[in-house]
Length: 111
Image 1 (cartoon, rainbow, N blue to C red):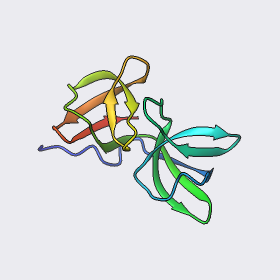
Image 2 (image 1 turned 120 degrees about the horizontal axis):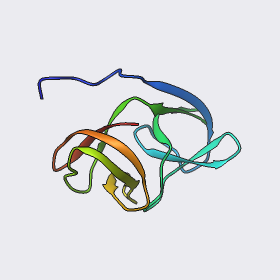
Image 3 (image 1 turned 60 degrees about the vertical axis):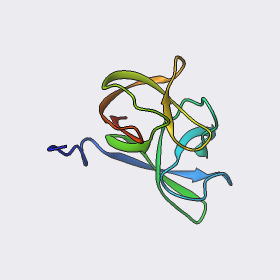
Image 4 (image 1 turned 90 degrees about the vertical axis):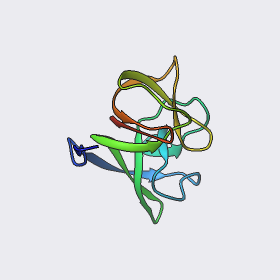
């Protein structure tokens, strides 16, 4: 692709991380007051963990992200949900995100 969306509107917030978050790059959801957890199958996610240390998770809540995809997702506004393996797929119950690029293995979208 000849264009790059990295850095667009990025906002990162620090949350407490529950024990399920052990690495960056995972989709997360709210699990308690000020605390995030790793998403399970079909969960609606609030962001992507971009760093984890000492019980805290830095979570990107807006901007462009690239995540592994279970299958190719068409560009445009799509409802996305988490998969159990940490990737994302199109679903009927997810939040709507703007998919701007997609391959068989990854999807780039605006949170």
